[in-house]
Amino acid sequence: MDRDDDIWAQAGRYLSLGMMLPAGTFAGYFAGYLLDRLFHTSFLAVTFLVLGSVAGFIALLRELKTKTHQDGK
Image (cartoon, rainbow, N blue to C red):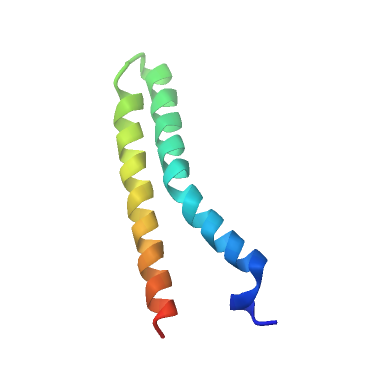
């Protein structure tokens, strides 16, 4: 059985793609929340939420670009 044809390998690949954006968003919000608590502010959670979303989207695009170039060979 070829590694590319394995159903579990495909499921893992698509699951990782589907979790990149939410993971970046959650990590950004969590970091901002902790910094808000540390510095007694109220805007860092939203700021880091946006930054985490952008970072997750960029990571998703990079991974898709890599997968597309690998599939095109």
